[in-house]
Image (cartoon, rainbow over all chains, first blue to last red; front, side):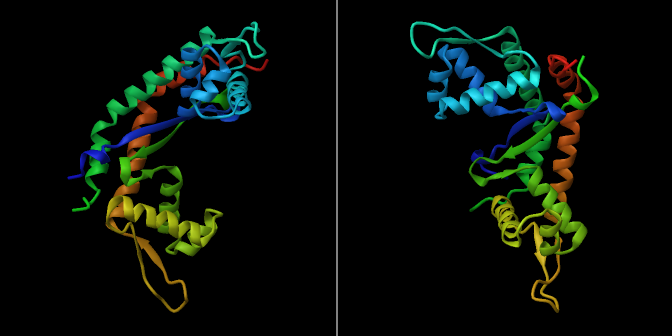
Length: 120
Length: 120
């Protein structure tokens, strides 16, 4: 039997053909933007560059054909930002899908983990 | 409604905590070794270096604590190879899990795809 630290977890990316893909990194970025109300602050939270965060947001805008983040130019050079209704729905649906897949695959994941030979 | 080319597909990686992870690349490599009966030939099929293929096989051996590939030193410097029973079981269980997850998530995936604004 495998130890507790080998409890398998799913990591799911969704490919939308030529429209791109959506995975844990982009979802975590959206969650950080939602929490921090700023792309710059979310980038710092995610330990990525502002440019990288913008690129990922832009990729999602391209994938879905509509903005997932709404920006507001405030007093500072880099104004606030918040998720659009679409952005919120994408996060919610992705998390629901992940949660469901993890739950429904629990038996198969446990069988795979049982193939692991313990260290001791 | 999204076009046919945006039909979403799952890409699943399984994390076994500190023991490592298993994803589509490693599974495809095992399938290629099974088909080609050689790690060197499988590496060519996968368009990766022999060293890279060996590294991935070794990572799987480490994850599962037993060999996933058995090598035979033949007449050539790089003898044949084949999957062990463990290697075969890993491939079969991963593919079954992926197939099941794709099927069970079909409705959620379709709903996510419906969020995509068509180009036209």
